[in-house]
Image 1 (cartoon, helix red, strand yellow):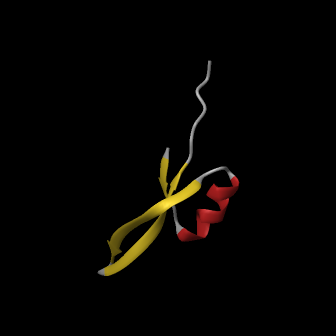
Image 2 (cartoon, one colour):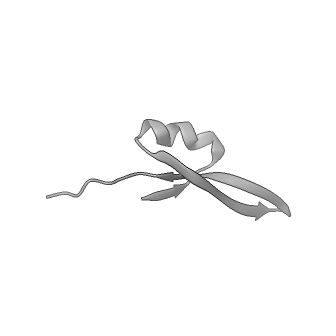
Length: 46
């Protein structure tokens, strides 16, 4: 699963097992913003 995280929530996702794999860039009100791109592996249920 990929998560585009709020910078303030990055630590929460890391504690849940996600790893930072890059940045996602976007624009908010004309200003460039970078957000942590996180990845988490999900286990399949049997």
